[in-house]
Image 1 (spheres, one colour):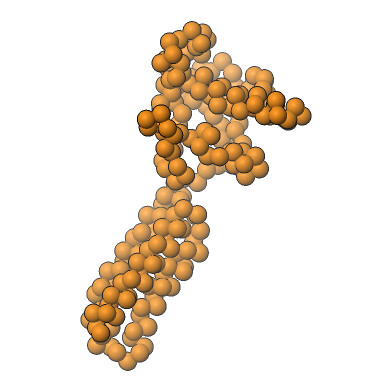
Image 2 (cartoon, one colour):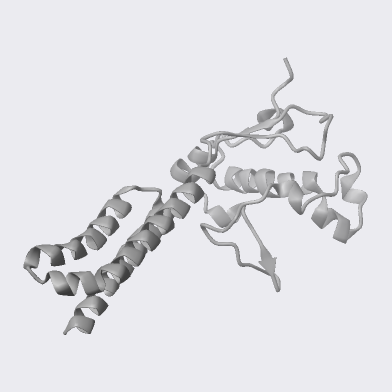
Length: 201
């Protein structure tokens, strides 16, 4: 019976860890509260009068609670670090003296209002397939698209064009806007240079 109760306690603590991992994905502290409550509930063994059994399980339960708190701390740090601004200024370090003004990309609008899938922009190709999924690390575009040619980029070799940053931006952003323009001619999605790159003041 004693071993069975300890096993049950540890199973419930495992559930608490799962709630905490959920909190890492959705950024909510509510999952932590629920998860911690499950772990805390094991301490009710003390109130049942089975103090001897509680003491024998105490070490296992304590380790479980500590592990739960550590998982929550790691989850909280990841969520804090990966908080995405509503608007992102795209200003690539690859071009220290850009020829046009930076693009103000409305990330929140694209996700919530325009319903653009994350994988439309974020990608990691393996065997010709995009394997990037929500929650994976996000790198800046120039981490991979590090070919800096800004004029005559379409004269580059096919392999170099794949790495060219300007073509990557335009192929993704402008290409999407042009497709939308064909489907909905009255859309306000910009398709001209000045639409994305306002004149420098």
